[in-house]
Length: 634
Image 1 (cartoon, one colour):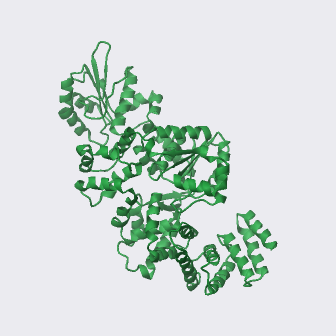
Image 2 (image 1 turned 135 degrees about the vertical axis):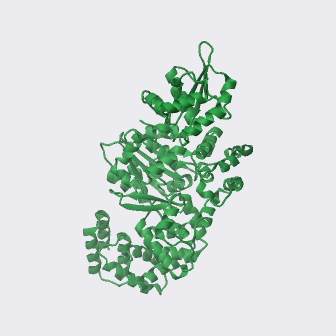
Image 3 (image 1 turned 45 degrees about the vertical axis):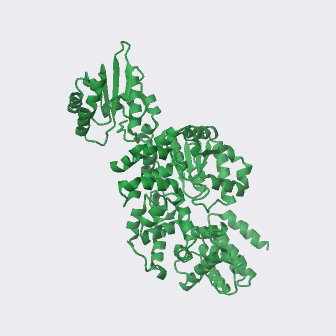
């Protein structure tokens, strides 16, 4: 394995070198706390009392000339004060024989032999003979090409919910804490773990790292995007597989699984429990998990609490928080002037002990993209504002960093619910921009360039399908949905415009969730449903899905908001549904047909014809036959 060591920060590289070279020399290097090292990263005293000093320089992205200059100007005076009997240098740079001679000259006469200068190639050669040391340094091997080959060579990765690039980025910043070992123990013991916790605590990151650890051991990775049936469809009894379902109870604070889907998940958990070749990792925010347990009886009856592992900020020690902050700074693109603002008067201590500390906020304050338009002198105020008011972390990225068209795309993705196909989103976006009420929008209209700008900050983009030929767009973080929906609830015209543009079953679920959670009132909800049906009729149903309209109409019919004037809309929608081969939302369409028969708007022969066509075409034959049986019984 040929490592470049870039996944390690400078302190982690120092620990690694002390571990590796200590094993080579058969001695334990004494290490010291962070701070000015005085030219010593590791030290031991030989049996004759002579002092041996180790100095590590992690300058993998720095030209070798600069490293040599630094050794000569800054490090050599420190060595002169120490007067070690032996001085060992380890660097992450690749070195030629000429480079080693130049380093030896820069720290002469303290390096007695060029054999005491270890470059990238030397470290890799020594590590290759010591797999136990490689294994001890998690961030080193978890990002190796050997691990990634398991991902890249598996067709199932095309269906995964996060890209290899995102895994790598997350792994570089990841800090191994006690929580990792505890969650791993639950997973090993029960084969299923549900990682819960408050927003921003690092549930997804922990789940991803656990997944990678199993991938490194030869498990096939299966990330679920929508529902548990995805896992059932690729379940292979003879293969080692790890299944991952992020935020399985809902993408935002409005959504929760139906009891039907909840039962499927519990059944799949039992299936994994009984198979030594399988692991299953789920994540959920604690409040939503508790809500789900209250709504879904099977969750309580099957005692899934034993599979839960709750991440808590209080479980993080101050040293863990400091390491998280340091790792994010090291792997960020922050300019040195911004970093100095954190070190000024040891301000970083205030970050570490802040009552609102969590990894997501640390990610925000060290993200250079969020600092556009801010000077280094404004940086500390931004850090304090973010920590003091974490609920508003999306305020600036959403309003200040986006134009009207960029915000429109984020709004549409939010209203759609779970991941949206890029083609469908583009169509919804075009309809949104074409609406008369939106003609005054300002900014860059092009969908592709806007999507490129939003990806990685407010949105994520994933290639799915057997040939990676389907692209899904989702929110970069579920809390964006929380933020956007709270704002939209106060803007009924824009809310209506978004729902009228999407024409998706997911968007209808979001609308009904808004009603069910009291975010919008019944009058607003039913006015939007009525507007959807009315506009579809005006457009003679061109471009509409019959199942989608059946869902909208059934909820309007079942509401106290249904009035006699809606009868015309209902009859016209019913005719459109009956003319379709098989609507995607068949059961809702079937309810609509039953309503039509009851109202005398159609005869039973026409209803039977529709049902038989559906039974012949739908993959969910059992449900169709069940409904047909009920229909026959009256």
